[in-house]
Image (cartoon, rainbow, N blue to C red; front, side, top):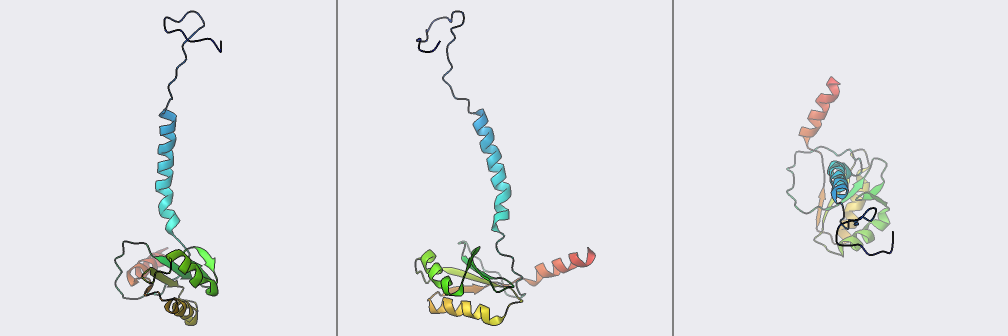
Length: 154
């Protein structure tokens, strides 16, 4: 019966004492499932824009801080991280993100099938905006050789 005080003594007949504890087992189960889902999907989220990078013999850069990435796909569309942006809107968006920090690290990824001038327009814009740490990303020949062997066998 609602509204009647609970007795501290023995329970009589139908009057039982209500339990005031929270069962945390279902909550822990849900949190563990969510943790596993995030651990599995997190590496898949870093793929980015698909770009066929040119091949070079340069050494890889050692970087601890994740830089901003500008990608130009085979159609010539420019992406800032994974967001489409026009050439005119690229520098203002970069300045808004970096807070006009000329020391911000920026990587430029250009598909090997696009015109050289498109990449140079992006590089010129970055240079005129004062960004000093700009790097062009390429594909290492080792990864391309392994891919080529797989495609011949398959």
